[in-house]
Image (cartoon, rainbow over all chains, first blue to last red; front, side, top):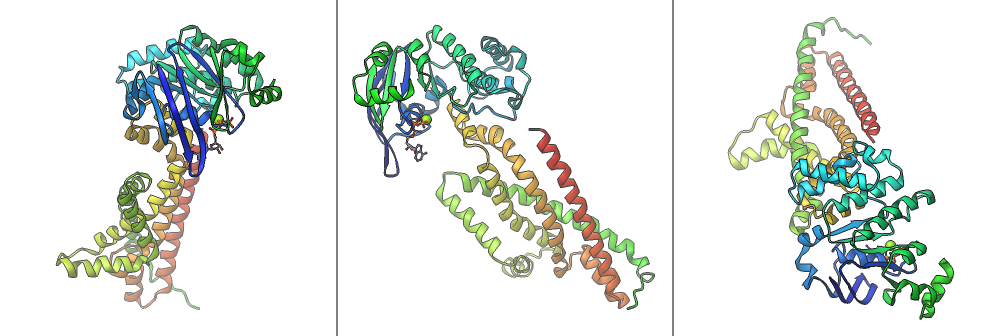
Length: 237
Length: 219
Ligand SMILES: Nc1ncnc2c1ncn2[C@@H]1O[C@H](COP(=O)(O)OP(=O)(O)OP(=O)(O)O)[C@@H](O)[C@H]1O
Ligand SMILES: [Mg+2]
């Protein structure tokens, strides 16, 4: 579904991605892990063109993404560490905004779909609340619903639980687990090793802008091949 | 010291009418300045280099030269060039609109830049087109930063507007001078004019505070 080949990205003279090559298949759940500054976020952001890469290629269903721009963005949902909900819109408006503006869905259909999604993330009672009234965990669940409202084929998550108090991490991970069950293709940058182990089909371990390991989680967490992965796991587990 | 306000009394309504002229002048200038300033701000944050360059140069020139000079050029020099006679009021409005647009464009640019970068990213990631994103996501949030600063601009304009008296527009200031000249007593009418300006500014300041409190509450 996604073919990444020799992907390179620099900010000025700082090369952040130094040639990433991997293939992500439909329905796969990928956990991306690695030390801070290793380029995980940049990798994810390149996938939906929030950053434009300098070399290499990213193809989605065979088409180079630079040519797809908006069409492609509609197909890729993204969930951010800091939620980025629209503070001047209610929860419901947050979710219906893009379907109405971008997909030209009728208001009625958009609202109906939004209410279904809110139910799925357990926030039916918050439809008319403003984001400032929600807890971090609730905000992130709304953000997931907002991304899903565009009916994406792929969902990207950039540390979706890192900004949350510990007691709220679980509710967000539960929503993500439910999403896994629907067969959604997901790429998740995370520091939640237990979660990665449980739901991921593959773990991509990044270090210093390179893809160092690409393994099944059972293999990666029990027998990391590289020293760098071993050192990293020792620190975080 | 002998102040004689009795002599001023018959002229008070004449001077007070200047409030209307001044407010009209400031309001029209501000609205035009806001529209033009918005366009300039969009140039500044946009991707078109030449427009960005133009807006920056424009701002630099209008902020870097005296307002009264700009006004005299528009009032005296433009008719000389074009042969078109432009009234004092219109020349004043035009000057103040062009000038405040430079300041307002900075206010708007700063207000937009102060909106969390994540808002733009979220909109872009949802496939929202640039225009829609600006109009429905970024600007409504930027307004919170922009409105209080705009109120300050309103206050500044109200005070600065007194210089249109120089080209003869019949604002508060000009009327005070006329009354002074006809009575051969300047102190009293100028004092009254000062009081009027001060009260106007206080009123606007208070309105600004109320607005800020409202905006803060809507968070
Ligand atoms: N917009 C940018 N401009 C300049 N440098 C950047 C930019 N974004 C990221 N970088 C740099 O790129 C490198 C990788 O950043 P990135 O955010 O991808 O790392 P990360 O693996 O996501 O780290 P973390 O776990 O801390 O989120 C860092 O050195 C960072 O300073
Ligand atoms: Mg990151």
